Length: 132
Image (cartoon, helix red, strand yellow):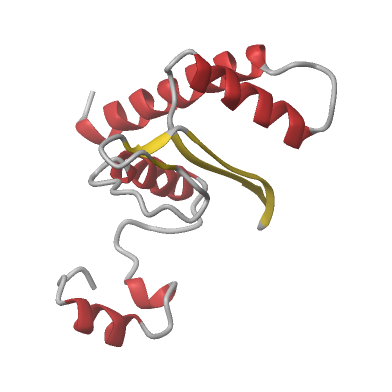
């Protein structure tokens, strides 16, 4: 199995397992916002989650919340405005999303960034990343 296929299957399995676990833990009563709040509060109380969460569907924010300490040294709590250092945690999620879009033929790995970002040349030149 090539690396791309392995990463796709591993990421899909992770998302499927997480979705199954979360959906089985969500109470059946109440609106979505309340169910998400209760689910995340349970994970926080079990020491399984601390941070910020935003759930959106088709561009509309369904839920936005924060749980726990952002900085234990100062006692600063997480808020929906807390800046978090994600480091490289978002790379596998982005890669999985790109692979799914490629499978749906909505983009190609060889597409230039300017196809999706009109001013990408200026943006990337300023960042000096050399991506586009």
